[in-house]
Length: 404
Image (cartoon, rainbow, N blue to C red; front, side):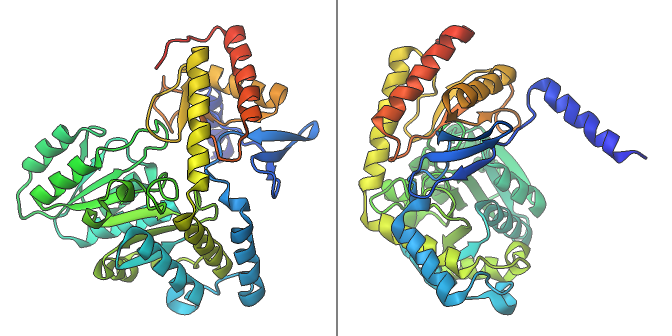
């Protein structure tokens, strides 16, 4: 059997739909974020990145880089293996203590990525709690969906951010059944924020555990960067808070926080923790420095909010449709995969502006978009230049200016 032909036929179909993804070859420039070098067929050119999840530019913060370099000199590069055999390092434990303190929890547990922490924690909880039912928000991330699927627990979807639907589904379940409500604080594609207080109150009423993904909120919200749960004063009422080190904290890795018993339970039974090589100590040291800095400094958060508000105002004035939300994520709707890719390609090739097209399956068909994430390091001049490009392209392409 010619397997390559089978592979290629599906790739060709993906291209025909306009959903084939081409990754830009970028080289971040240390100390010059959001600038990067783009390597293409015509050579190397400078571009401005408008879609980074390094939301605050902490990946190039001198304190964070210094901590990583110091740890490499002190410990070398790798962790030495899985933590249960040879990889548990003092820096891992220091970082876990920092994370537990960030969220006001007894303990924390590190993973190699936010995807893995969701997959491992949810699959372990769902499989080890007898007759467990997981109530999952319909907008949850693929990592949460995969973890729930792998657990083989009963899954009930509730309408996105719809607490009435959630309550109806909770009410239908027997009181003795272990229940987990899995949801996110900030949803990464639409940028909307969950009704957290209402969800927590329902969980307490019906005796359910709350599983909160704060991946797109940690570092960005709350007086110390603890996320929406900290901002709303609800962290102590959430059973498990999951987050990432790879977005606002500017490094890589994932984690969960909760009670000492909960974290020890996941540590002891989660295959995604037990059987994978641990994060290098230098990564842990850099993440700890980033978290410690953002616990004390609100400058980065305030400057980011200023630039987010500025770009939103300019888009509104130009009549360019974007999804209105209370977060830092600005989705500009195109609603066509071919046009979305064409716009992204033109911005890159003609203007030196990099924004990745977002299409199916990341978002539903018909909701294709460009997703902008202004950082504190994008200047007013950067916004002016971006708007000049967008206004010209909107005129050329005759894209609808109806406000979303």
